[in-house]
Amino acid sequence: EDTGLGVHLTLDSETPVSNPVAIPTIVSKQDTFMSRSEIMLRLIKRQVKIDDVRREWTAQVEKVINAGLRPDHLDGHGHIQIFPTLLSLVIDIAKQFNISAIRLPLVPWGLKRLTGLMSLNLAAKYASIKFKSLLRHPDFMLGFASGGCYSESIFFKDIGLLKRGEIVEAMFHPGPVK
Image (tube, rainbow, N blue to C red; front, side, top):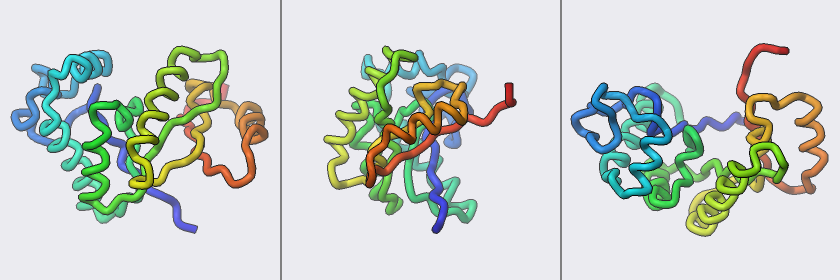
């Protein structure tokens, strides 16, 4: 079976693909993306022009396609792809590039990172309603709750919680073995 390839859409802490002059509401004075907290605050205050995000995310997807790769899903740095004011844009970009799936980070509950899990799950639930049958997505995503400490034993414990027929994405951030 083929391995899927996603475009990891980003709006923070990196260098944009687009000319910074063309996307002024999402870049800093240094012509890079702002920090995650800055861009989130600007999104909440509606100080971001959606056309700037559209221009940049379109450029990010085009860069992948122009490299000869064919993405089958979208995901996002810091799960930005499920930010409520960006959901319609994500759907538009997916349609534009014939991309049929998206990462929807619905994560199992746990005590570690509880506040983050609550807000992430609420945003993901809202996104799942908005996406409806427009974009396929996994039922759950494993790995987020462990935040960079996802061990083999935790992975096998998580797998034991799943039900037959569920589609699951496991997220791993490679790093040194401790």
